[in-house]
Length: 208
Image (cartoon, rainbow, N blue to C red; front, side, top):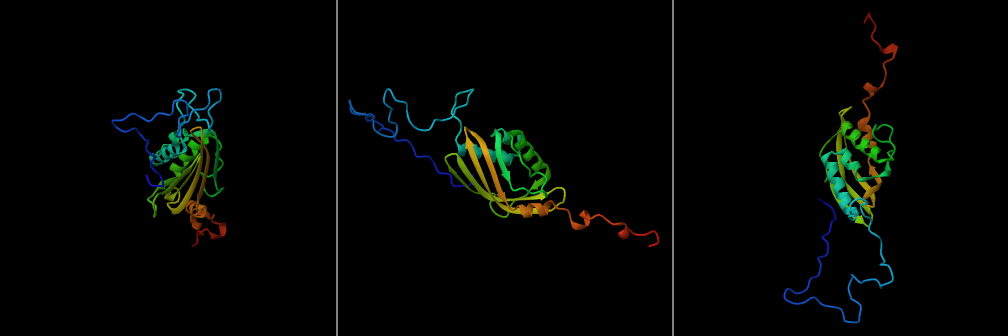
């Protein structure tokens, strides 16, 4: 996928035909994997684990990349499975857009993407769909471009977007989307002649 993903630093190995270096007999081992003293706990942030399997929870980059794959596949329930039970989901309030409203739970997330798919036919954007993925700790930012055709009106919209995601214990807890809400709202609005009611004075008479 596109973005700023970097390859992990390869592990350093011992020479093929030689023994691995050992620490002095009475001295501590050197390097990044220094053991804690016998009676003191190891320091550093704890890694969350799956309560069922005990496996470490996936990191933010892994979760976000899987999220993007499931969005591309159009899998609302699969998308929602990556979210925590309670979610800080924010899209700028827009009464003209029927799928934009508060969505505080995992079930709401599935409903959001289901309604979005029902309301919008995806289209190829003018720019790259995904331009950058930046991850720092539990925080991730995705930028790109989106486009679609609103099924109810047949109108199209294009918009750059920025998405902030926060991942805790392998689940998305924050989803903040920034897009061109004016363009999306305009595409959702019917034409004036379809929207305005016809008054009695404007109705054709039987004599005309």
